[in-house]
Image 1 (cartoon, one colour):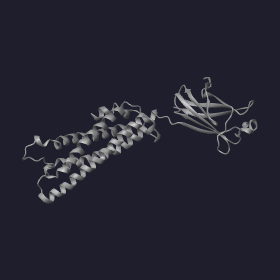
Image 2 (cartoon, rainbow, N blue to C red):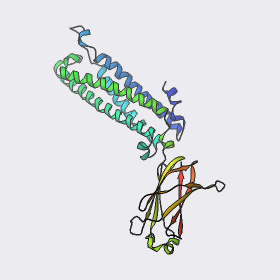
Image 3 (cartoon, rainbow, N blue to C red):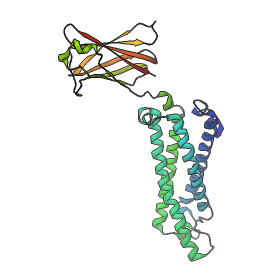
Image 4 (cartoon, helix red, strand yellow):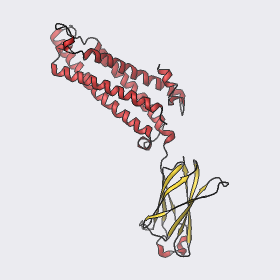
Length: 307
């Protein structure tokens, strides 16, 4: 069962498949053991009192202590394999919030942490009442009805919540299988700063660009529609307004013609290309022609990589 799932998910692609396949199988096996045992435990713990014989108490020995130990081992396996598999499929911190895969993974992590908190509370219940029962009744089996009613109600609610969250974790995992891994889908924004060419010094000294720089941010820096923010900065770090900025997108392949880029002013010194289309991934150059006066224009080349 676990191997069948593993052969259908992302473990078969990407880096370190030799380690990803057994790690994914262990991850799923540990989750199945924990959730399966939890459901069985829930059925036993949540039997309505009206459907039990009045004189019959539910014994928690040895099932609950043993399941508590098994759950601890399963959580350890899930944590170790989960950290590795997350790194393998995400790669960078920015991809967690910047991709559907990363956001789903964060939701899964939140559910798992909630389960861990509930499981820790249930484990404290088992250890505390096992010690109290041993002091009072010796080796007699620990019964659910022997515990205080308030504690039993908390245990029942905890088990139900664990089951619900466990189902949510499995559901999110199923969706992750059909979601592109963040490592391949994430495209970090391109952020490049280049100095203003020396040619601009004599062309327009009054513009304030002498000794300045051009900062360009391109999001999401991948094939398709992109937004480019262009900042013209003087030597003192202040934004510098110019009469006009125009641009072209040049490919590293010289046989591909340049694509015009429409650039408009957002504020003095800040210019935006709201719909810069990148045809395909690869190395590109955004060529900016900065008109610093009625007669002078300074070209600036900004290289970047699109995914």
